[in-house]
Amino acid sequence: MNLPFSLRLIIMVLISAAWATSAFALEITPFRTTNLNPLIQIYGLPSETTSTVLTPGSLQLQLTQDIASLYSTKSTANEHILLDGELYRWTLAGRYGITDRFELGLELPATLQGGGFWDGFIMDWHRVFGLPQGGRDTAPKNKLRYYYSRNGVKQLDMSHASGGIGDLSILGAYRLFEQQTDTDHDTLALRSQLKLPTGDSASLRGSGGVDVALFLSGAMNRRTEWGTLGLFASVGGLYTSDGDILKNQRENFVGFGNTGLGWSPADWISIKVQCSLTSAFYKQSTLSELGKATALLTTGGTLKLPGNYLLDIGVGEDIAVATAPDVTFHLGLSKKF
Image 1 (tube, rainbow, N blue to C red):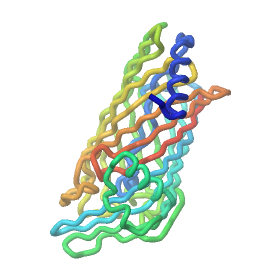
Image 2 (image 1 turned 30 degrees about the vertical axis):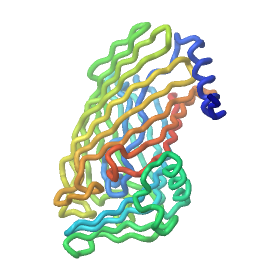
Image 3 (image 1 turned 180 degrees about the vertical axis):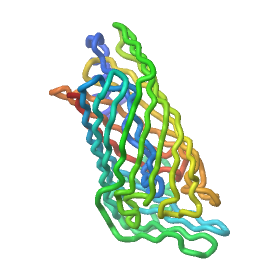
C-alpha cells in the first residue's frame, strides 16, 4: 500500500519520537481555544486552561490565533438563520503567580470578521471525504452575512466586515490540590473569569454585558517508559447578563465543561484531543445555531521550540452540527518566565 508522503512523514516522526528519551516528556495541557460561533464567542465562555497554578513571581504569556470558517442556514415555521463568514481571533493572555496558591491574569481578544477566502478549500475538503456541503456550494463565495429573524421580525443583520478589540477578561485561580513526584503530577484548581464590555457589540466583538464564570479544572500526568500520558477535564458555570444581542432570548446561566487526553513520547512533541461542551446559550429557539447544546472536538498537538516556547497546533470540528463553526484552525504560542 502506497501511503501519501505526508502520512509517511508523520509516522516516521512518531516512531522516532517513541524511541527518544521520555524522562522529561511534555505534560499534557488543553488547547486554549473556545467555540467561535459568532453568537457565542461574544460571551465570557472561558478558553480551556491548564489546572496548574503558577508559583509566586512566575509569569506566563500566551498568544493564540483562531481562524473559523462557518456556513449554516436553517428555516422553521417561526425562525430563519444564516451564519456565513470567517472569523479571525487573536488573544493575548497573561497569568502571574501571586502566592503559593493564587494567581491573577488578563485576557484581551481582537477579532476580524469578514467573507474570508476559505470557502473553496472547505468545499474541496468536504468533497474529498464525502461530507455534505450543507448549502455552502450554492451560496455566494467569500461573503459575510449574519442574519436572524423570529416571528417575521428581524433580530440580527450584519453584512459588513469589521475588526477591533473585544471584551477584556480578568482571570483568577486558586490551587486546591497539587501532588508531584518523579513519575506523577496531579493538579486541581478553582478558576474564575470576569468579562467586561470593552468590545463593540454592534459588530459582534462583545456582548455589551458583564459575564462571570467559575469552574473546576483538573489534570493527571503519568510518566512511563513510553512517554507521558495525560488526562484533563474541567466543569463549571457561566452567568451572562442580558447585554445587547438577542437579549430577550438569552439563557443567563450556561453550563460548560471539557475533557481530553494526550501522549507525549519525547520532550519536544505531544499529541492530544479534547472535547468541549456547553448547554444552550439561547432560549425560545429550536435552531441548532442558537437553542441547542454545543460540542466542539479539537485534535492536534504541541511542539517545544527553541527558547522553551510551546506551540499548540489544532483543528476543531463541530461534532454537534451547526453549534460551532464547520472548522477552526488553532495556533497558540506560550512561554513561562
